[in-house]
Length: 151
Image (cartoon, rainbow, N blue to C red):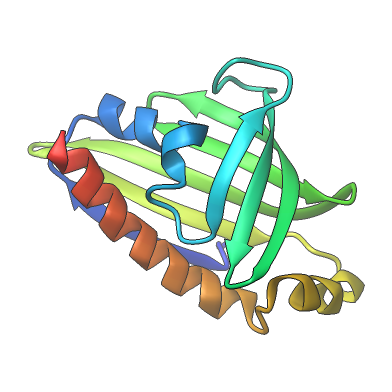
């Protein structure tokens, strides 16, 4: 299934360093566009089946979600997001080694039922989630590159 938004960037840092950044709930808020923090609920770190509560912000609006990690290997970190018990989205970070470091692809799939989209629009202030996520991914990847390459 084709993602609703996706982009990639080449980073002059090891795949392991990048994996550690994208899967670190405390550090990710320094990089991600809407994510402002999170807490592991049933684990102490990224592993398949681990759940975390994520806090998100956009302007004055804030909301939380619960996510379950589906992939936590050296080449991929991914999780399924739920809000009020409903599937909301999937986020995935594919990390491929390159000669100079790695290429990171960030992708997301919108999983919201149609009737739930107007409710989330009110909660988040986002009218077109695919367009917003595309812009967010591009900004996030630029910050990830700067952070990872800074050491």
